Amino acid sequence: MDIREEYMKVGDRISVKASITVYHHPSCKGKAFNIEGSQGEIIAVINDWHGRPISPNYPYQIQLDDKLKVHLGDHEIEVIS
Image 1 (cartoon, rainbow, N blue to C red):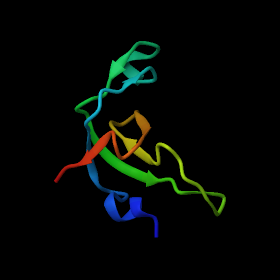
Image 2 (cartoon, rainbow, N blue to C red):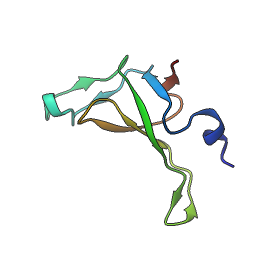
Image 3 (cartoon, helix red, strand yellow):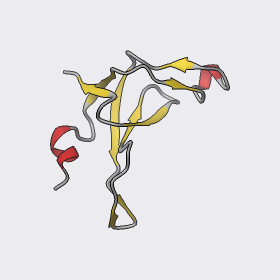
């Protein structure tokens, strides 16, 4: 079992703890938008590709709002209760 699966799992509520700028936010297309402090849910933990194990740098797929999904690493997010 991957250590990431023991620490954070699909369905966990998270908060973004690092200053991260995205340019694909639906309400600010093409403009800088900082997601620090945003809250969302882990919707996938990526650790294989077509059945082959991989070690991605940003393994957590996070749903931050209805239209925004981002891939983040464990150093950028924290689990909230």
